[in-house]
Length: 310
Ligand SMILES: [Zn+2]
Image (cartoon, rainbow, N blue to C red; front, side):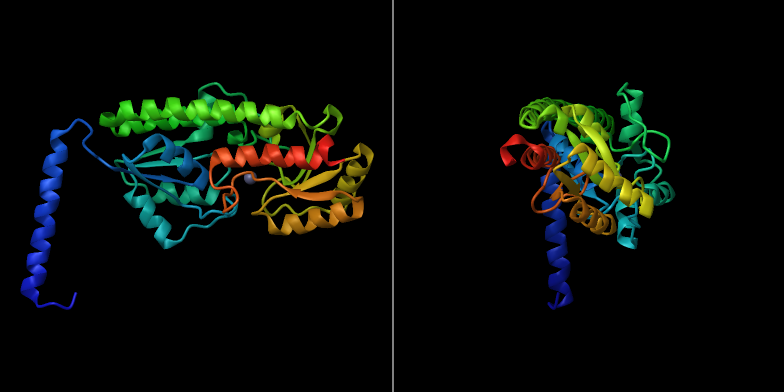
């Protein structure tokens, strides 16, 4: 940007001319790239949306990988993403209250906001109650069949926002839905390594009810029913007793729950249980996609609670 003004003007003119030619060319073809802007709350929803959108949309998430949706507070750059979005996907049901407040205040008038959990319930999926908090447990995507419903809702939403891409979205959905079906089967096959009496999950927060239901496990306890709900001494001794009474071999921390993780590590140490890890929403270098998250959790349950480890 150091050249004389005349060359900058020329360079700008060339960019505009090239852009006009490119736009002119693509207008003539059927799959004219409208490139809609899609913003999600969780990185996991951005992964689902990317699978359906292919290169017809720019997809970005507000939460960085590894952040906790329950407590995340958006920054000014997040507000810019919201104002520029054509379509926003959130979960709803109280999962990400701060984000939804900021989205509501900044979403542009022509844009559409879809709360995937609310839409999935409208489509008929059955919910579980959130222990201690009342109302439905918001972590519906932990059941891959409901994840499939989320993907179907994303397909419908993108097709409305960008009708020219509806064939692309439908084709991509069929492929992705088949992958989710395979993943659900893989999870059941993998979890089969755990004997029925040992199918018990203790975690840092109440996020695994739908996963448990999908693979025939039960949630036996957790440190915190919600964000900022610290475990009382009674809760801690109750979990230690549960682990001992039920002969639970391992408990599961989560990458995004630091305070509750330390509490659960102490509980495991006192109860003589192994500490393993499960993912409920955060992504990282180990678990990069929604499908990888589901596969990881099934493998970790089998590894830590299965017969092979004994
Ligand atoms: Zn959660």
